[in-house]
Amino acid sequence: MAENEKTRYSDAELAEFKAVILDKLEKAKADYNLLRSTITHSSSNDTEDTSPTFKVLEEGAATLSKEESGRLAQRQLKFIQHLEAALMRIENKTYGICRETGKLIPKERLMIVPHATLCIEAKDRGK
Image (cartoon, rainbow, N blue to C red):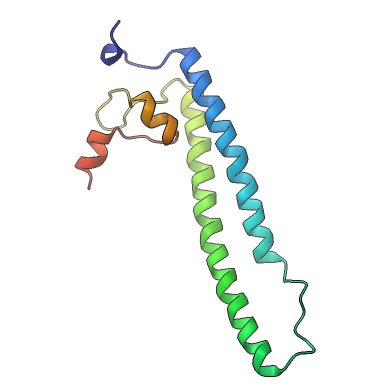
């Protein structure tokens, strides 16, 4: 059967994708936890004994940093959710099938973007 005639990936290929996703998921969760810890724990460099002006400036920078960390944490959480959804598609053997065209998403694309649900053709149409 030719590559373009396949309707789904084989169990062996799905296992290969699962390994890639689990690896990315582990790293993503570690990054997420790191970001969360920067938001919830204040720095150990206390500014109590420094000038009031410096303290205000430092608190402003810390707030900005927490906001940025919060945004990054949100993006990371969304990425984790996409990876977990990809694992569910592997389990029910629908992984790698474009949700618009019904064609298989090329393996090369899935290795780079393992949570992809659209083939490039469908993605480009949506722009």
